[in-house]
Image (cartoon, rainbow, N blue to C red):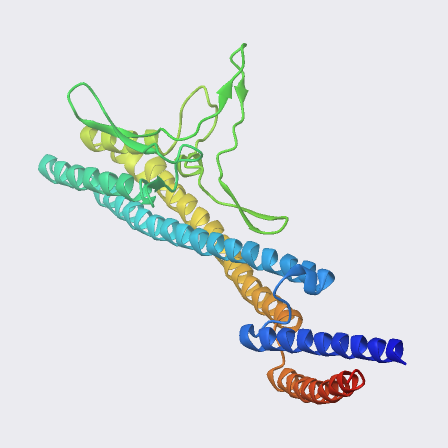
Length: 319
């Protein structure tokens, strides 16, 4: 009889301890508003929550990259807008000087204004974002465009100093990628238009340099020589071509901006979905959890009351 009473008492104590453990668990869940507080509570769910947290952290990093890249492309677009304005003004000046009715002083005034526009053009193409030049290729700390001058300090065009192709032992050109790349999602990269060589718009044979710089040099020389034929002919046509080249690059950058906008929308949507999934696995249902806590509390109090009676009865058996 005493062995049976002892087993009953032991079982009752174990039941009370289990109930007390559940109460502590429910109380912790209600305090933290989390289903689990340590991996041992539910190893599988804990692993899933950790993976979701990592995905959210990575998603936030992608969001920052997208926002930063969007600002970069906006800066490029603004720079090319200003560059386009300068080139259009240069075109207008070439048209004005090609009439053949201007005096030497008029042509020099046009040349002075053209030099000012060339300086403005170079300033626009040397735009930087966060200390990095946006059209310098991989050499983002190197100012990409510079005004060329002769020994007398006279402006002779512009030159590019950003990323250039390499050469092998035989002097053959080795193409070098100069467009920066950014990862905006898992397995998704976007290539930025940072190669300023596209803006130089090199034509013909590389051995005979013919680009934006030589065009501007030729325009300045034609003004000095009053070469109205060149001004009204090839130089005017070339000016329109150089303007169109900048506009085309601006269009390409606009397409990248649209892609980044779509990527940001997908990133935001994915972030919401990930948080919702994590909430379902991690957060407690307050009403449901409080009801479970209340029911367990009642069961615990009943167990205590019953246990007290049983223990009192067992003690009396020894008297």
